[in-house]
Amino acid sequence: MQKNSQAKTKAKASFKTKTTLIILGFFVFFVLLEIGIRAGGFIFTSLQEYRNQVSIKKRGSYTVLCLGESTTAGQYPEPLEDILNKRNIGIKFSVIDKGIVGIDTSIIYLRLKQNLDYYHPDMVVMMAGCNDDGILYYRDIPEAASGLFQNCRAYRFMRLMYMHIVRKLTEQKMSRSVTLMDTQTDDQNDKAYTELGQFYIKQGKYSQAEEVYKKAIELNPQNDKAYAGLGQVYCAQGEYAKAGELLKKAIELNPQNDEAYIGLGRCYREQDKFFQAEESFKKAIELSPQNYGVYTGLARIYLFQGKHCQAEDLLKKAIELNPQNDKAYTGLGRIYFEQRKYSQAEDSLKKAIEINSRNDKAYGALSVLYDKMGNVKLSKEYADKADMSRFECIPSITVNNYHKFKEILDKRGIRLV
Image (cartoon, rainbow, N blue to C red):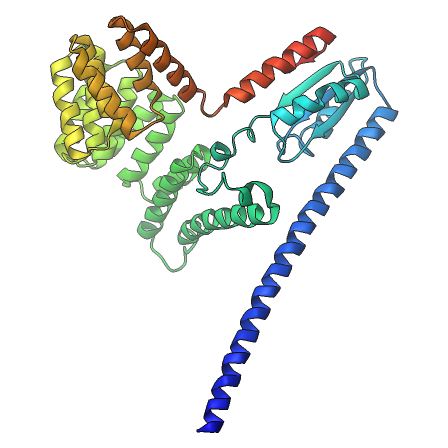
């Protein structure tokens, strides 16, 4: 009994020791990674400055100073200098790279006069602003505003790598499914290409989506989903004639393809062909009566035509199917405004904002509503909120800093790009 007790005690001690060593090892790795990233940044900056000094020594008659963040640092300035000088227009260009990874426009502004005095540029090229609002820049990361994410480069690196790996694995998994040509039939492969096309559309990668949809059609000319997907790609790029032909082909192959009717409706709507758009959306509703987005799409057609009663019924149906549909509430607010039902319009628009605090159209509609009701103060308040929401991806600090850059450069006679 005593030996068993001693053995258990030793096992517990051994487990604690191993756990402690693992935690300690991870901590050491984390610290070394942080040091490595910062050291790498220092080395990169040193090499960048060395190149700038070389460019200054062989100074040309026209100097371009490039300011910005990671999209500038080590990116376009060096090839820009080569491209400009190869044109042989009688002017020797020197392009200075002062991009800094992770910098924001406020820090660029603080260093602006120093850089101008040192490099004496004839032109300043600015490309910055992504880092002015961390939460927006890292919108998919819940803890982006935390001190750990903002200040610890090792943690930020690992978090971003994790997100990148997840996206890549998803893409590879889907890509792998279309490369198994020896073990699958053409029918199986064309379905895999179609799924990959849908994946690319969600990411906004239209050229890749176009390529794989075309491959799916090549493998199976009867694949209605591939035609519909390719039609969506062209519609998103404003090639409505091509889009319409492909969507009609999808419907010809499968008259039950509700997504093709929806795509065709959107295509017609963008061309102001309201009658055709209406018919397409109605057919989509007939095929997919639970799709709340179709009701909202058809309601927009009726709103354009001033058919408020029909639009109202459709929007109420969309809300019934999805109570969190802020677009439907915004549409209802506009209808009630046109009908001078101001109290109902106010309630609907506020409901839209309650669901989606970034709904700039609802803020703007409320501003117009309060102006109509004679409430100047509230009208101004909601107009400001609408502006803030519209420029959310371009924070006000970015806009203000660019104005300050322009003011300083104008005084010195330096062109700003």
